[in-house]
Length: 273
Image (cartoon, rainbow, N blue to C red; front, side):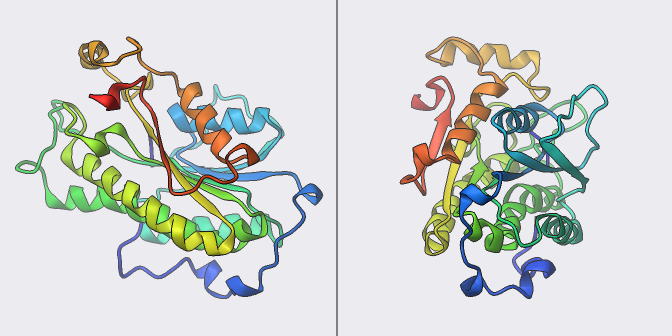
């Protein structure tokens, strides 16, 4: 996975002038469904873009990298904004630019997928006793504060669409992982808690908030060392990005219209140990 705000950082500027109480929901039939997704250029994020696009949704994406040349962007993938959401000012800029694209329309889903899991040059696990504390702050800016800031920033169009937010957490947020660093794991644990808090508050806007916690998924982040974890997975295999994407998509549909504050494990049963 790829791609933030500190506690003192205010809500996105573009959202400051909008009054939540005055935003009336639109009839969803009048407008094509629209999703905003971060961390879209590879892995789980890219698979999720494809799933929403295949289902006919308009897709607006963001990542720190441009869309790779080998990616086939269809007409549903209407906009991609290059921004490093670990930079607080970039969060504001992204929200402002995306809101300008949406205009008076609705957002029906926000998928907070962007994240970072730093390693040393020797791929050593960064724990509590090693590594620069500034790296911890950078991880939390991207993995924790960005989802909070984006939820605030897109609250008005999400209310219009009676939409859903899905935060991508991790199995590493629920136990000590042999390869994921402590900063990453604790940021994902914090995001799980944030999901519950957001679910209660955003319910007042008729917006659902859930989380998806992937396990060992076959992406560019996975190295050969992860093969040793397969015996600990009841389904005896790693997951595919498309399987995570399918779960995210369903959480944003009427099929899960009465589900909020929940975290779904896409781990092949690994989280049971």
